[in-house]
Image (cartoon, rainbow, N blue to C red):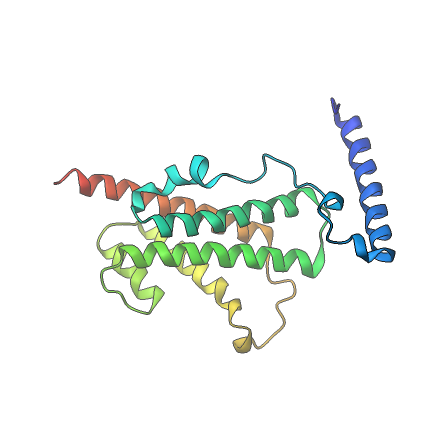
Length: 198
């Protein structure tokens, strides 16, 4: 049992050695690659449950498909964060995980903004202005959403003029997650207020 930092470091060292040995063995014995009994178990407690953890946060949307699809992206994000926080991934792979996480948050933002915008413009910027003008979000969140949309432009690879190496940072990913949290809260609170008028 891990009881202190010393035993934690020792346990992590043991896991790292064994994991590398597994990779080395599988490399020369590829027939075992996809057999379930040889797969590494993903730890429990790192990924939220759709119905117990995420559904209550988004039930105000009242659209089952949207709630589920947003939840699925958060589950993906939970795993990304675990990889970033608990493994030594560095360099290009780390940045691409961060990029994918940011794009997931931007996708959630797009779906939420689109649901509440009344102008139904194809422009995300105009939709954000619409929900701000109607008092659904504040100015800070409006600016944050536009920042998020700008940074997700990397999804269009054919439009990029330079390499994306060294562009994405974990702090940006964390900011994107906080923006979605704030967007969810402001829309939920406004929905409660509006429902009380009827």
